[in-house]
Image (cartoon, rainbow, N blue to C red; front, side):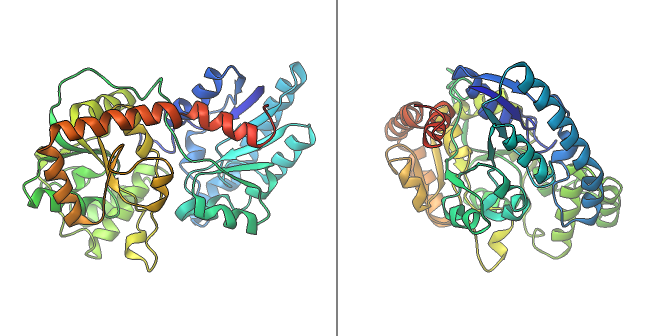
Length: 387
């Protein structure tokens, strides 16, 4: 197929990653499709996607018509040179005016939007979703939400690109590792593991804020808020501001981590290599700050496929949907709460052969069933785009 692809490489500048280029664009190319990329810097667009935030809304009102006009211009040009079969995007409401999607469809082009934050941020695609022919949805429980607004969802779980996520033949260095942002329940889980004398290490944005000492995230409260307020239009500033406010309310004050356990963000290859350097790679299933609400939301995540695809041993919170993708206990391991996590970590650290057997089985299962190449092919077939 001739595909026009529009997405930013990552969701925001906090990530040293080409996550969506690696996981969407490259697999499309690998499948043999002729893919044209939207030639536009979407970095600022993806850092301002909250239509309910007045500061971001001001930016969106100026930016969205610009992105829309340029998108239509490039699609018309590409379509005139060679008919486009499919418009494939990762867009929020803030990225494009719905009328643009209607115009693309009138050109005879099938339109598809991929979005993976619908579990707790469905409102951010509520406006544009009904205008697409298809919405690829990894949150099974959200399918009815899409239908209720007149959209056409297709269940497509996340996956991993085996050309990027692969094992490295390097020594094991760490007992337990986690890679990802510090938010929600994660810092509390890590603190509790350390209290149980488990040697756990974490990498990612925000963890330095839990280390005693003066860092960019651990300044006096007034100074931190002032610094964040001066750069509200950056993802970094908004994250720090919200973290400070949570800290002021007492939510984060009881979590203090040793500096030896904390590292900063990793780029893609550093992350993948770390999966092979760790005896146990952790995953967390809860979304955002929903653990402090009356309805805690859990979901299958990208990391659930990235780690085993990379040949790492993976341990994540149990949720029923994971059983659709893995043989629990034989391909990955699941825990149910903090105490069970401690017990399972201790068990698998002392049972090397069993841990290695699960690691190998998880890798083989991902290679067989959970590549983006397979997910996209199956989705296109379900849409009637491929035989």
